[in-house]
Image (cartoon, rainbow, N blue to C red):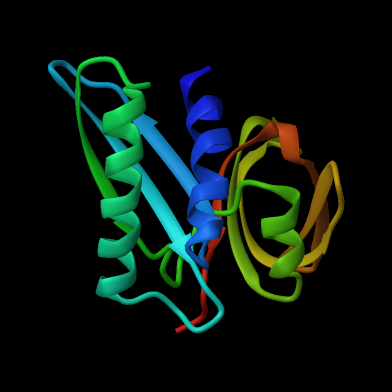
Length: 149
């Protein structure tokens, strides 16, 4: 899969620049696709950081040409409502509030917004209205942090 190939190639490149590749999204489109990289660093991300990563990644992608056709490259911070995809992402935010949407319904529901109480290699636990739900990572369609206002 192209997304996995891009992530395998670009993660070490981004890390070599001193950042973490938090997430990579690729959406092919008619005539032009979109490659979006979310980068993170302990000190936060600035516009200069995004530009630095964009220039370096562009040079590599132009030389290797792994993406068919035209595409737009965007580099940004994952932000406060950062997407959560991996076990490591979830583990980092145990105790925080998350919003999770599952592929299939669990107990009649597919959307869970509440406290992330546990995160393992294959499941996460979310407490919603006093009830704890154990959700398989493989069954999560999308998830993100949901900071309290």
